[in-house]
Length: 179
Image (tube, rainbow, N blue to C red):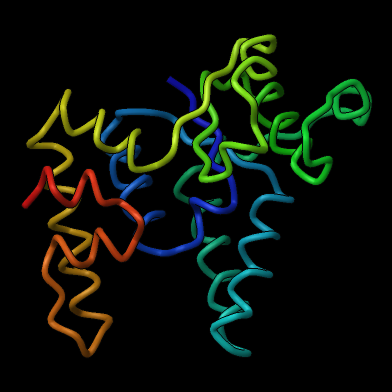
């Protein structure tokens, strides 16, 4: 299964680490575009001047880890598409160009199901997607979550616990399932 990851699920870090960790275990193939990655880098500016630089470094590593994940498309594709928010048309174009099965996003209202269905796509939020992956393969998702928790603990001064970490990352169903 191919899943287009919207910028809003690539940034924040814990959500991205969970999604890409599960992808790394072969559950799905992630897709994105250069524009989606640029949106992530711009959003990281909120962390301060070093935020964008760190994001750009992580983006470079994504290119190494997932060499086929970045999709491109001709301008004519975007020109024929419509979404309630015209600024999100590029996400739909990327999903179509990459032959994605689904768009993983937090912006449900900007990606109406009937419009996606016309293009052979569905949409799911990251919590629902990861919870579904956990239902299908609980040990695999739990292992990824433990790795993400260990990384969060090593990079933070806080002694994170699984449920609060995942709830803060807007993954409450997964947090409850793993608790």
